[in-house]
Amino acid sequence: MHVVGFAGFSGSGKTTLVEQLIPALRLRGLRVAVIKHAHHNFDVDHPGKDTWRHREAGAVEILAASPRRLVVMREFEAGAEHDVHALIARLSAAPDWVLVEGFKRSSLPKVEVWREASGQPVIYPGQPRVLAIATDSPAALPEPPARPVLDLNAPDDLAAWLVDNASRFHYTPPAET
Image (cartoon, rainbow, N blue to C red; front, top):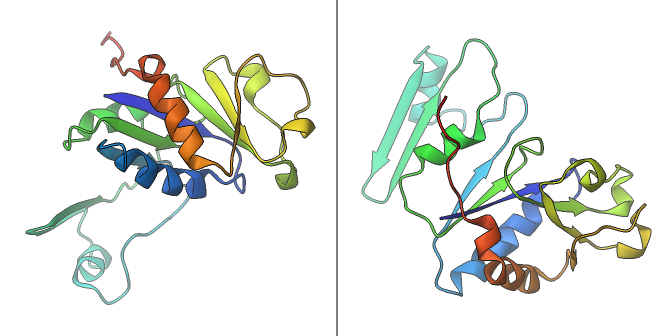
């Protein structure tokens, strides 16, 4: 399994890039899973649906299963950040690639997603785990990166770069202490 993080500030285009990379990798015959870091009280359920009603009634865990889909929702009384390695360990689909959106401070190898128009700073100068930068404005990078600069608007090229550099993204879980 190969794992790559996509790091950058909100509005940089991480979700769009990951969305475009999934079919680009699938066309190469690869199975892809995604782990996304979400902020605040995000919701994947909809008011009025059975699972929403169960959660609103106070269930701390809801598992919904059909012949084609399984969803687990778990409520936490106290907010806590999740460890990305624990989330990776929970994957059961045996993917070839795991695309991790967010978790920019994790120990995973990453591609930074940066748009000058976002007005946000770059993170690569202080992040040795950033192995490449995907941007739509390479000339505006504030300091020359000592790593590849890839076109944010060319997801097929980025998918090819990932596959060509797969050994740099081979996942080994951290040793337990």
